[in-house]
Image 1 (cartoon, one colour):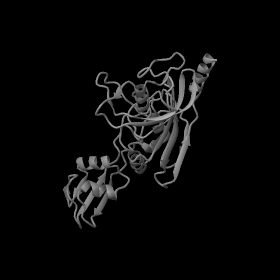
Image 2 (tube, one colour):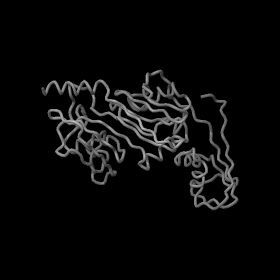
Image 3 (tube, helix red, strand yellow):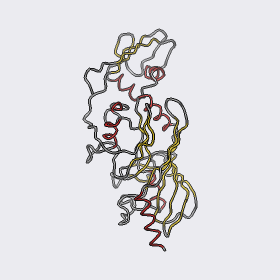
Image 4 (cartoon, rainbow, N blue to C red):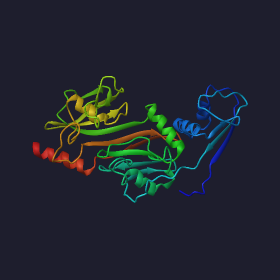
Length: 307
């Protein structure tokens, strides 16, 4: 990013009393997330009547607040020309049909070659949106889960979609093939999820964990397997994988929560639908993604085996 970019300065005069400075700024600066506002205040970029401010300070009528938004810090993320299947794109969002095997953002063991690296090459303006290390990311999919993911291209879009997710207004649908067939055609798994106390790299159903609910419906039965349509009411890490394993019907090919399969080198889980409200226009948007070829081939293989 060019070092010639300048800080943006906002001067705000309070027209009424507000219980807290951070709330005052959140109401006036809709393009900034609450966490971003807290960071700016904590780093000394906000003054109240000429003095460096604190988040909980009270704002009264006539008070003068100056907010400075510094240029986005340079990051060590490298733009990379990685092919992406773009389902939709405009000035605010981009919707990607992510392939299996592609991590969403860099982390231990995969410093590059991720969706974020690909997006920085395609949409360089997302640099710093929502944070330096995971620009544009408002939700994620596991590396070996394929399907739809929406990315924010502006701070306003990041703030708005994050709020929609928090308010459970974003609807994400999945298809999964289970080992075993649930006895009921549909149901809900309502079981709290937390870090597995015995295996810290995994998640598990744990008493006192975060509330987690997954709705499922059997779409098709194969010999000893079931294709399920799933909807998340909450969005915990590995939620579908953990809940189905907890039921006793783990996802086919899931080597972490079930068993590896020679017929498929990853878990049979695909994010096939996504619905949200456009962050700028408010329009209801709906996207669909067909099963990718590797999952179709795995189902055909099971069909041939059972015939």
